Length: 326
Image 1 (tube, one colour):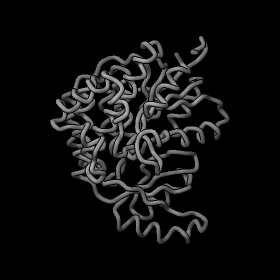
Image 2 (image 1 turned 135 degrees about the vertical axis):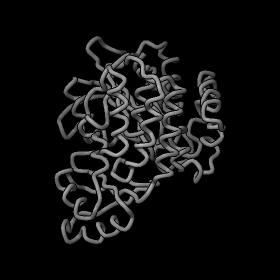
Image 3 (image 1 turned 60 degrees about the horizontal axis):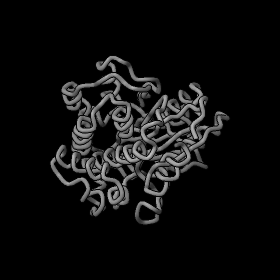
């Protein structure tokens, strides 16, 4: 049951939270989800349900397919949640990691679902087309990681935790960074991530330049609640032009997720609800866990902030969270 002093934040994961079968359980159970997937197919020009439910996995992993599939699943989870809670749960804030920022803007009514889908479809195509290099996760602070990245012609791509920073660059430069890491930080190791390019770095500038005209063609409406920007870690402007510039820079600037969590904490958020995606080795929706949960809880622990964390990522978690908050 939601109390008067409860402050709820919706969060949405980014690329890497996709898997074959994503959304199939909700599609079977909810007419509103089936309607959403039909709208998605009409919008992007192919059957997102088929790609999401059946794969093959190598097709779903392509950025141009991953981004529309994840956005659709995240909004499907949200719409099913709204149906089960009779639309009575309104957050004070929302944020999404990279691609998830677009889902947060759709959730807040800034973008229509169709426009959000068109944006991420073209964003994914541009990122895939201009994709070069890759990304590595390091157990370093941003201050520790920045000179290391500079030394090897790389850049910080994401600040996920106070002690975890993702660096992006060309493959040859990342290889050199990994080879040189033991000499600089003997106890640290680099974990290479599976991406089509060095997202959120200078290697995405060409994609961002093309994406600017795509952003300019889309209508942005006033937000129903605060949405945080990955680029600034602060609230998006009410001015549509300000939102466009933040989304433009987001493509080739680091995702400041640590900063977004700190903004939420400063606002006194008491409950986080994560919508969509899923990770873990088990097959199918029922065996997945929330993508951002571990990162969020570690960030909250680092600043000593206690908050409830609830997932809405599959049929079971949806019903449990809806029952808890209804």
